[in-house]
Image (cartoon, rainbow over all chains, first blue to last red; front, side, top):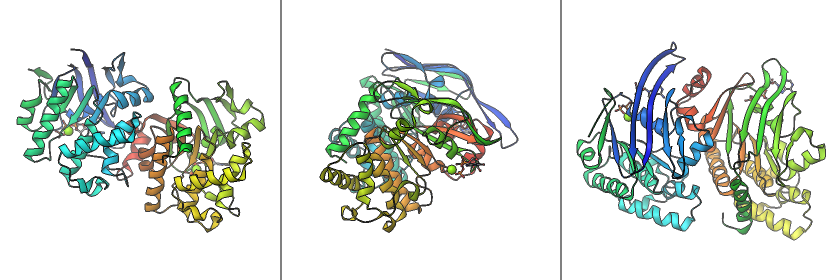
Length: 232
Length: 276
Ligand SMILES: Nc1ncnc2c1ncn2[C@@H]1O[C@H](COP(=O)(O)OP(=O)(O)OP(=O)(O)O)[C@@H](O)[C@H]1O
Ligand SMILES: Nc1ncnc2c1ncn2[C@@H]1O[C@H](COP(=O)(O)OP(=O)(O)OP(=O)(O)O)[C@@H](O)[C@H]1O
Ligand SMILES: [Mg+2]
Ligand SMILES: [Mg+2]
């Protein structure tokens, strides 16, 4: 098993310059690693920094200290200290991220939203469309919605579109922030199945799962951010 | 967008992004000041093929000054802009001859102005507006020029039977789309845009943004875009530069700048809008 993510002594604080300059620490010296084929769950009370850590893994947030080594197949790059275009390349080929909420782009159809990560990698439209429709079907997104922009969709529909987008590209590393939070039991089981299949393919996963049952089905280890411990 | 012509642009730009390790532009210490704090000061960055760089900041912060300086239209006080030419050689754009600079602006580069009247000839036909740049690069065949004109009108979603109409009879959104077609017709590698969606209705803006987003993605264009609209920046730009009083106060990955701004001014800018 290859170590795909190696987090070393990561610290993140926020300084709110326009609110009296107050400063607080959210991540304090966090270290852990994730190997291929493994799913690690971030755990902890609300506000303990789970999403902050996950966003840092995607370089959406900028930690002040420590490093996040990401293995892309032939080299290892510290995404916490990488140039924008290196991060962009990692996001194109190596790391996928399913955010808790879908960011809707005006006028762009569901099908295009889902296909985009593959199209950015240079895939042909036909191939991308075939994968996208397969995923949307599997996640029970009704076909009549595929040509519409997701802005008017329900929370659960948007979340499933977001999951389809995250899974379309077979990234070696996948980050999932509450992927089942607003899904019914049936769709939740589909997502659990998809996560287990990804593990089988060798994907390294990091997830936040509030749902105890989902967590116990998919997670191999927990990283507890409340007091910074790791359990099997 | 599937015609041969667009595929050709795409192929050309893809080839050049294969050698993506070479920046298209290398900007070092670029300064143009009208008065202290008015203009742009000590700007440094590299732009790589296929990258979209957004320049944001409050009114008067120097965005237009910087863009004009970058696009060979305004001589800087100091600093350098190295351009990696199609033929491979690297040259400082202000050390080139005036005629070479003009040639770049007519072929390899494009400029989309905030006001269509600055980028279009209002009293010649839409077709002639598109054809003009083709003729400037040596195309003389009237039939070809018209055919390409029609294809580009279609690509920017303008009804083909408007080809003989003058742009002054077009809506603001159509004029902006015509400006884009006029620029793209010469297969440019680098496009400069100053507030291309400014002054348009919200729904017209959304359509233009959607078009720009697709063109940029499909043609692998490198773009430097000035906007004061952070939502536009989020949608189009890979990277952002935040300007204040002529200086770049923060730069980096677009979503990182917008979601985790570090500089007090960027925090203020981001928190002043609803959902950037
Ligand atoms: N961009 C930001 N700017 C300032 N503070 C932030 C930012 N993002 C998160 N925080 C703060 O960091 C702390 C951790 O937030 P985070 O979202 O990581 O928590 P979480 O563990 O994911 O919580 P939950 O379970 O409620 O989703 C919170 O106090 C939050 O307000
Ligand atoms: N030709 C000029 N002569 C003198 N001062 C100028 C000239 N052009 C611009 N300035 C000044 O330089 C500063 C920067 O202007 P610039 O047009 O670059 O700002 P901007 O960021 O594009 O603003 P906006 O968002 O309003 O378009 C302003 O204070 C402006 O008044
Ligand atoms: Mg969270
Ligand atoms: Mg301006």
